[in-house]
Length: 487
Image 1: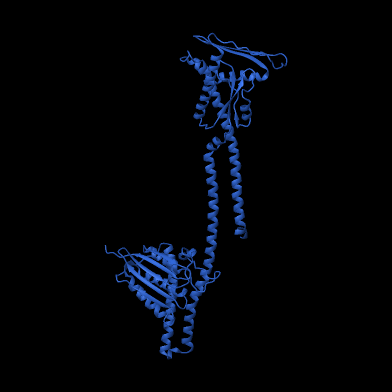
Image 2: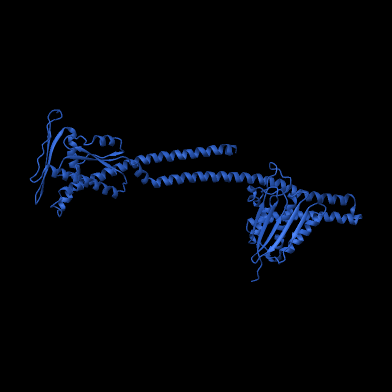
């Protein structure tokens, strides 16, 4: 399906991620606004409770044991009533508020004066009267004390509600409603939150109190921290899912290409011995070679060799399927690695007797025994040596070292070929993978299964295989197998 190609898949994925980011951003903005309003309500409630507590503390002296006294002054009804009285001043209503504390009761006198007509602001001076023993200085000192306590109570309420904000207050003249500090008032107009006006004691009515919080964004973000983290993780997981899918698609496309290349290469590999056998049998029949026993034996030997090679390729494919399915059964026995290498080197030298290829084998002075399957380990050595000969060209030079230590047996097979680029050194052991030479064209035919088979066999034997290589300086394949120890 063409619309699933990368040409359309990448833009669609980008669009999906952008839509996800946009939806998350819109949701977070709405949540931010909702949390912002909630925090403002929490701030207002905290200031309200602080004002109520300050009212109670301003008159509690002598009534500490009265539960009725406490319940009244800390009740929301009292706060609402007192707040309504304060707010009446905005409707051109003047009033009088006074309290008289007796031993057995508290008398609060509240009176309202409503003008019949629209009145002009009065310029008359407000004259205050004080109780016996009180002076202007003592009253102002008491007002300052209650103001400081109001700030402290606000801080306590904020701590209870985990409202970590910086704040300040603006005072308004109780009688005129004008701010005491125009600088603070102007500054407060740009704040995120300004509370209602509260009187903060019952004994004195000099000021109304307004709490100002310059910014609530820090608290909003703190309360949204889990939502922000979850949104980020969701977007990250979405992006990772797309990356994973694209990598999977790329891997599948690569796998499809190498599988097609494998089919072509394997067809060629299988066709070659079949063609040779067909030609040999045709020659026997056409030229009546049964009359020439020497030539007949030569052609039969060629046919047997090709059949053996064909059988080896088929067994390699079948073995890989069994390895992948976990069905292969190794027939382990005491195996002399040096003897296996020596026989393989002799066979390779015989096979390449007419070429300039050279194989140098350096055995170890110590015996190199492993607990392994002779058939599969021999195939491993054949694959590595055969690869070295094929990729190193006509002047191939293969050097083989074998050494033994207490716990491991090491085999190093080195060639003088073109080397393997760093980006391919991990991939060469993958199924079907072949190092590209000229735009996916290989001068050396092969199935791409040899090194994958080698890796699998060494792994099931409990060993490891690695490669060291440099461009134009050949390659070294290092095999390490567990040494044989009698139990």
